[in-house]
Length: 213
Length: 264
Image (tube, each protein chain N blue to C red):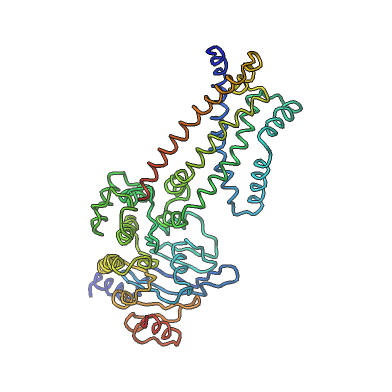
């Protein structure tokens, strides 16, 4: 079993890499997407809203197939890992934009007005006043999404990314010990998810303690 | 008469330029006209109280002075900075204007993720580019002035409503504004806590701060302000020295309003 476990764990860096990169893309791109969704121009709001709906309506596995077997085969060569990161990053951006939007709506408009009335430049209003409050509100939803993304990264096994589920599948077929192999890989996913949830709860409690009784 | 004396007499006789000059100000929300050709001046050191029924445009007028609301038309001049709203002013001009006007809101609008000291120091660092220690030293002076230096390290939620509003006043004063704008500063407070805020405002007025105060506090309007403006339906229906306006309003609408608020 130790040998099987060692083989399965070869997929761990790939799982972490796909999840972390897709999450990073989402964290960064989610912000301009959210801002475009709240633009003063109706056409941009409509365009961004439609794109978010489109991205969220299609299952992750279909996105990965579309990128890897569709764009990747006909137009330009793309590795399974890159296709997984791009696909999951795309999905991540759409979800993060909505998480940010929800968090922004919870911030009282008086916060922006208070900062603007002090003569702060709009960029500073965002950096000093809006963003810290936005991330505090968004944190629990972001942690839930990150855990979901970690589990969804298993989908990338279908296009050949040698991550945890891919390795487990290979070991199961090679050894016919499916029960043990998949139980082990399930335990690895739990071991990865629990600290994320735990850390986010601690951070949330700490940040919340500053602003409420 | 010496040349110096002549110059001094001349400058005394010349009409003083008002610190705040608002002319032909118009603002609509869709088809609803909220401000209709508003004109008024406020002299240096003067306290102007703006009163009137809800929906009369008082708060919108105040918010137009520092462009939190952009007027559709009209001109605003504040301590030498003049903006013509009709010409779509740039961000630089608007920021310049805001730096001259401190604003205090009904709902305080303190930043909950910052300590009281950080709240007061923020704009000093960002706008006046003061160092952290300079800003903090000035903030402590201002917090002391509003009687709250002991709260400097606390977060706003640990302060009462009255204390939060006094902190908001200190924060607005931190930029050394030429004029202070108060938007119903005591409306969210119970009468006892409102008194602490009014007392700080009274001291500010005594120190010569130019103030424009939108208020429902009739006693404050009568006893502290130099002039009172009564608004209704987006227009100024009465304007003049406070004692005169509060005791002897001319228009029927103003009489009705004052009668109603005094009978409450």
